Amino acid sequence: MESNLRVVLTTALAPIAWGANYYVIRHTLPADSPLWGSALRALPAALVLLLVARRLPRGAWWWRSAVLGTLTVGGFFLLVYLAAQMLPSSVAASIMAASPLVLAGFAWLLASERPTARVLAGAVVGILGVLLVVAAGSGAVSGWGIAASASAMAMSSFGFVLAKRWSDDTPVVASTAWQMLFGGVLLTVVAAVAEGAPPALDAKGVAGAAFVSLIGTALAFVVWYDGLRRLSAGTVGVIGLLNPVTGVLLGALVAGEHLTTWQLLGIALVLGGIVVGQQRSGAKARRAAAERARAREPERVAA
Image 1 (cartoon, rainbow, N blue to C red):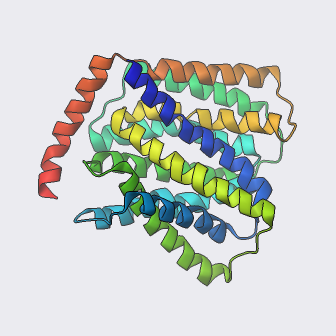
Image 2 (cartoon, rainbow, N blue to C red):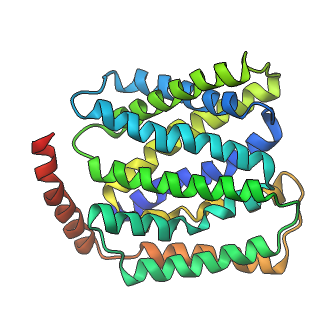
């Protein structure tokens, strides 16, 4: 149980960092260069992780990394960047609240991982909390921004479940580095063609880019994928509800946004949903992990 709790707490670092990304991107990086902003997030993270992993893809991981890099890095980062520039931090982060249900649905279809009643209950409670946070929020809401955020949520959920389905004994740092590299190179090429030279960054922009790339991307994706390997996709998705909570709290602490009573209640519901959604016995968790490993065995042999 203690080990399971440690994994949950470590995984929680990812949505906290992603929630912070919305604020950092919106307030430190240029709004008129979304492709370069996304490339500057992915490529440095990939290079740092490659230095740590010190290995290149082999066999099926070449095409798997390309697919995952397109879904969870190339398209996802661009859509998140656009959403962060067009929506208030709290709203942009809160659109991702549906991800527990979407992630659990993809996991059921692609990984034969049926969501438990506890996970579904935690997701529903958490989503209700997010709705309170969003309804009480302030700021202009762009329809295109909502579309970008919702598309990012669906694309990333699909990619995360594929990564879970394809996980093997490859170190998580290495597999994360490979997809970051594919996605980062794709974004860099498209950015150079569509936007020309990269934007000039002042000291504030450099600091923001460093945070988004190293903390909000390299570290966040490694702990997230590690959590997906050790926990059910639905459980990890519910933990992801810390994303909007972080966005709202940063808006209050850093930007001076006022938190209403309804927002505080919403945050409490989100935290309660996370607690409900991640509780399961260590024995059940180990049995589920063993079943997933057995289900992937024929695919590993074929690869």
